Image (tube, rainbow, N blue to C red):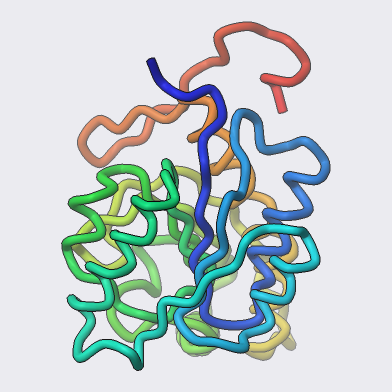
Length: 222
């Protein structure tokens, strides 16, 4: 029998703005059938751990520098997640390349948020401000954010949710980054997490179907 409440681990490497969006959504009751059970950082001392502490969420460190390579770190991270009985892994600004052992341990149970409309401006080398620099260089009128399941291909997993954001004439990478976070990332990431925890995401090849709630109560419609 499956657990009613899904245990979520949020993986972080920096300030944790997307983590905060998840914490705020949880506080508002918007993550149905799920709870943030752990925050795991790839290095000590990052501000995301302070956010977790303030929210009374257990924080842990699995530091990249403590391992000889990415595979060794990934294996240790999987062991930690399993020991915490985690159901869903959320990558929220996690700046370490994970190897196939993570996807094999959590197939279609790892969500990542990317600050562009995949398949545009994604893949190897597209992270942080680099994404927005490239979008502005190309002259796009719309950018946005994507939440997708993580596969062994970088930014190549099935898309769960996307939200477009207008590019303004005088945008810099920094202003575009901020607007995409506020208008897209902080909206669709908690929504995708809630849908997963409700069992409403069904992966069919490259397509993710969003299933209707089992009942039409106000809670399930959030």
